[in-house]
Structures are given as C-alpha cells and as structure tokens.
Length: 193
Image (cartoon, rainbow, N blue to C red; front, side):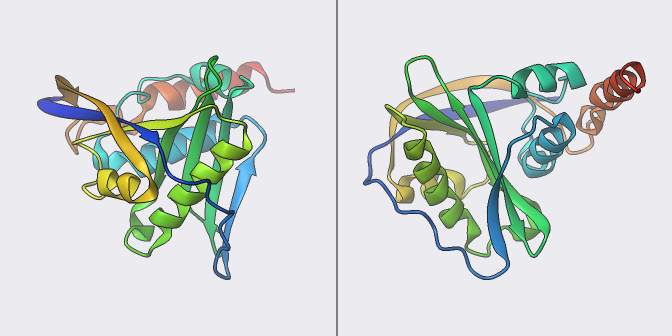
C-alpha cells in the first residue's frame, strides 16, 4: 500500500432528465437481476483495478452476497458484442436519493465513446428509480476523464475533501482478492447439494 494524497469530489446531478440511450448495434445495457457476488466482484476489480479502487478488495463472498441482496442495490452490465464492457451500480438511500456508486468501463473499452453514453444512461436509470436526488463521488486517483465526464453530463461539485489514503500499488497482492476466492470456495462447498 502506498500513502497518497487524494481529493474526493461529491457531485449532484443538476441537468435535465435525459432520454434513454439508443445504443449502437452490438451494444446492450442489461440489469443483473440475480445477486451474483462473483460478477460484481469481477466488475469492481476489473474496472477499478487500473484506478486502485480498494474499498471492496477485502470483502468476502458473504459480504458481497449480503450487500447485493438488499433491495437498495441495482447493477447493470454494458455488453459489447457479448463481451462485458462496463457497468453501473446504483444504490438507493433512505432519503430517496440514488447514488451512482460505481461506474466504469473495462480497460479495453475506454476511449470508444461509451463512457459518456453510459453516464447518461445511469442518470436516466436513477431518474426512473424515482430518485429525489442523483449524486456520486469521484476522486483524483480515478481515471483523469472521470470528473470532466461527470461535469459534462450535468453533475456539479457540491463538496470536496482531501485525505491521505493507503492505495494499493499495481503489484499489491490484495488486488488478487484471495479472501474473496477462498470464501467463495468455502461458501459453495458448504452449500453444495
């Protein structure tokens, strides 16, 4: 882990309600309606790995399962010709606000114009979930285009903070998520028919 000064920005959506995206041929956004820890853990690690997302690297299989089985969490997968290309995770809070908790593309799909459309669709999905407010946070350790992309989509910075955070290096063994792998094996062994 490396100590890094990180700025976190909190943004509220203040733009117009977007229409649903008309995706190009071969591109689909589909909701994952069944709680599947392997899927969400894969998306979090694969999309967030290059940007050192670390908050869920220590989660066990049961942590993921408990989180995903809540009625307040929804996940959509972006598919490009049958290949996972990215995802959106929305969380509805008790005050009725919807947070775009995680959002991003797998590395090989960055720079193809999908991020802007995925952001617009995330806003549309949050609005469709009767959000009283749509918000998100991003940080200086995330993709350099993340903050400008959100601002172009209609988000406005409402708060920021700086903190020294312990981020994994690109060779940190925590990125291999051994706790998750071993706990998933144990969970499936215990629950095998």
